[in-house]
Length: 111
Length: 113
Image 1: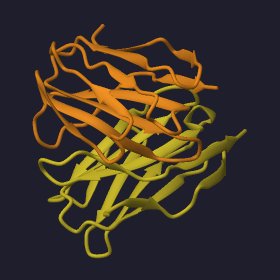
Image 2: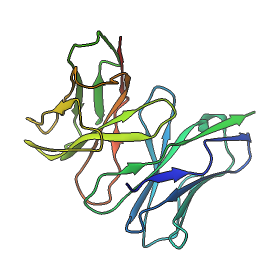
Image 3: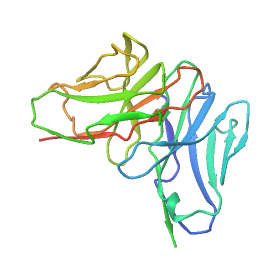
């Protein structure tokens, strides 16, 4: 079936660097995309979302970019901090369907 | 504070026993979901309910059952028919409107030996 995937299972950065986490999706009918952060032993926390009528959305230290032409989603984290270390999941859905999650990228931030 | 409560956090059972995982929300959300997470994997949908007294199977419903008698509660039973029940189980809810993010509980880690 349709699925959402991530390009890299792990990403290691230095504190203060900018991080970019990528995600490819396969369902061209998807119209809503979300990034979640999951810390060990906890449930995923919502970070930021974007609808298909947008190509960029910014939050506090985070930016999500959507490229519908190549079906690619990315999460940019500015000035990465040790507290950003976690697993990051992208998820997508089409109106009326349940979210589909990718496998996740583990972000490790060293100081 | 509003949120989703899953209990217990850790659960141990012997093979062949049914076990029920609790999920309660006080967010007044219409829709509730159960996901399963295995190590290094994404979340896979077990069951979801968009309204009281109604629920639908997700991608991996075999060996599981649910009920939705109250808006606030969506318990999941892992039956003895589930071949690989050991996993991290996550409950989530949304208001039910289109394009709204899921709010997750902190999960129950089930170990079956």
